[in-house]
Length: 397
Ligand SMILES: Cc1ncc(COP(=O)(O)O)c(C=O)c1O
Image 1 (spheres, rainbow, N blue to C red):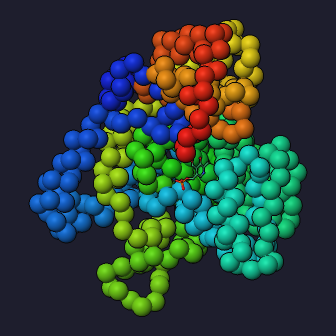
Image 2 (image 1 turned 120 degrees about the horizontal axis):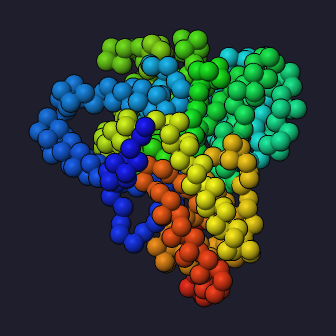
Image 3 (image 1 turned 90 degrees about the vertical axis):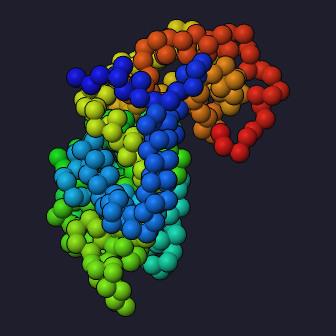
């Protein structure tokens, strides 16, 4: 059994804050500051460039990839970290398209994170006018996997509502149609159990600054199914994905296996922080995380609905259909969230009217949920959100 009291003690959570936004940016693992500082002073400072070999910096992208892989049902050697998620989306979709040269359509849904759609739009424009990004409603995805669809690109857990797509069923349907799948796990990795291997997924991507707690700007990851790694040609063919980067050949030859999905120099400071976070994750079992996450979200929904009738549930009511987040609609949701943050309960807001709360069993427990709802109820019942200072829109919502 995962010891959640022990994992909670491993985070640097400010006093008087209940942090319900780990679905957007995870908090600081206590060990990360010393780890990064040591890395800077002892490795960067003393080893200088020899750190790439002596301190094993060059192996960090795949080493971290394997540790993340355990949480998402990926076989060892199939996940590599680096770059940002938007870049990894581009990379995965470009490689997936090349595997289906006779088709020109990428299918996605309008619940997807806009950056995924923007990146594919940019990719397809560079490929030529015959290519099409087809965006349908989430519930219409299955019916739209037609025989012209090269790639199905979906985010498994909807960033606003937390609704989960059925990865296994949709992947099966896609494969029966000759379509390659790209799954975005930004709101899945560390949130719900994922079984990439069992679902026979083709490509998957995700970020490490949300549930995985790697810190702002932490690297993304990409998974390629082992049956495809030697066929998938990287469109972002950087030198560190080359078969022999230090041969400095003028021609690109993709590296072996997942190494080919590397692009350029890895962000070692960020990866060091992420490795401190993964030490905590190494103590966790995703089945335990899921059980506790469902308990927390069920408790939150019941308490909010019992005390705040103005808030309308925007997440699936069935916990099996929901990730590790809960959203409520409220026309003055932005102001209400600002009022909550001023009282130490941190969630976030997604336009036009969604108040979003993330539940992260590694450091949130039932007492935090009860206390957060007491404060929310006070704000709603006494209209404390209705103050000018809570209505000023900030750059990041
Ligand atoms: C589902 C999803 N995909 C893509 C992104 C973009 O990630 P990045 O800013 O790391 O490129 C995000 C960011 O929150 C996201 O939630």
